[in-house]
Image (cartoon, rainbow, N blue to C red; front, side, top):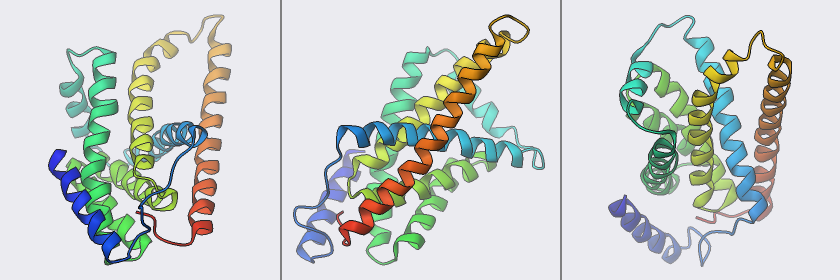
Length: 221
């Protein structure tokens, strides 16, 4: 991660000198946008996972499930949130978005650079489920990084996605255990409300940051 940050800073100075980006580079995120990005990431994770789950009906691949079991066995939820929910997203974003995507962006238009960086990010994860899941998330995170004009936007998206996935995995057995009990209807209503709220966060997040990027009208990072 440290070498990637060092290389990014070198790239940033080169872009500023060559007038590819604003000086100083980057825009600020307000507190509301930070919260929106976390919810956006959570919603993105859920609905892309849903899409991948449908694909798995036709393509059987247990590699991802086996890998996750081997990674998470023996660790507490808080340990997984720290390492998989916060540290891993920060490390991956410095490499795949701050360094790789922004270098591709120096030579390509936004859609091509975002999609290509997403494909590379997906292939890096090495199995069918993660190639599709991480590929889509990677492309969206690169696009939002560009539109927001702030490096931390993709990090917050990624943290929101990973932490929500961990919490959902932890909560799912407990929710299933409520079926047939007096609390089932209340739990189902709460879950549907959550999923609706996450969908709203995804839609609003896309519109908000696309509007922000187009209003700015120039490359910020």
